[in-house]
Length: 309
Image 1 (cartoon, rainbow, N blue to C red):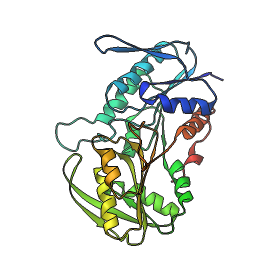
Image 2 (cartoon, rainbow, N blue to C red):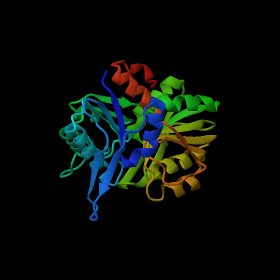
Image 3 (spheres, rainbow, N blue to C red):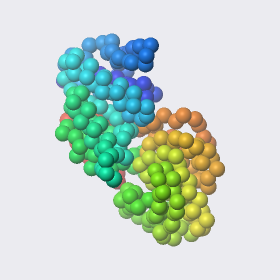
C-alpha cells in the first residue's frame, strides 16, 4: 500500500491539524518561504516520492491561498508523488460558475483548469455553490455534504414545529432535500438585487407562523440575505429562526448584522476559520468527515454511505 502524506496550506492549518489527529498521522512539514516583495515558495521538507499526497487548503481570499495550493500541487508532482489529492473544504470562486452577463469569466472553470494543469489527480470538497462545477474537472471529485453533520445536530435540538427555509430561489433544492428527510414543510424567500450583496426587496413564499424555522444555505458572506430573511420570518409569526450554512465567509459587517438580527443561532462548519467569535455562532467540525473519506478513498471503498441528504 502506498504511504500517505498529509500537508496543509496556511488558510486551513487548524482544520488540517484536526484531520491529521483524527486520521492518526502527523501533519507533514512544509515551509512557505517568503521574499521581501511578497513572493512566496512552498517547500516540502520531507520526501513524498511514491506517496499519496493530500493537500488541505480552502481557497478563500486573498488569491494567494489558491496560488499556494497550486504551487504545493506542482511541488508534489515534481517530487514524484504517486497521487495528489487536493482537499478544498471551501472551493473559492464557486459563485462564478457561468456567464451571467457578457464579458465576464467563468472563474470556477478557470480554477479547475489550473488545478488540472498543476497536477491534481483527485479533488475533495464540500457543498459546492453549484453542483455542475464537478463537471468542470476531468479527475474524480468527491463532493461531500454538510448535511452529514447538520442533521444529527438538528435532531438533538428537538424542535417541536420544524420548518426548512431557503433564503433565495436558487437554494430551494437544498432546502427541499432537508425537508423530505425530516418530513416537514418548506418556505422560500424571494429576493431582488440591485447589485451584488445588496438586496432591494424580499418576500416570503409560505407560512411560518408558529414554526421553528431553519434556513439552510451553502455559504454566508455579508449575512445581509440571511439576517433580512430571519427578521422577515419572525415578523410573520415564527417561533424561532436558525440558520445552517456550510461556509462562514462572513465579510464586511456580517458579524454585526448577525448580532443585531433575530437569528437564534447560526450553525456553520470550520471549512473557513472564523475571524472573530460570536455567542450566536455555533461551529461544527468537518474534520471527522474528511478523515473518514480519506481512508475510504485510500482503501478504494464506497463513500456513498456517508451521505444523508
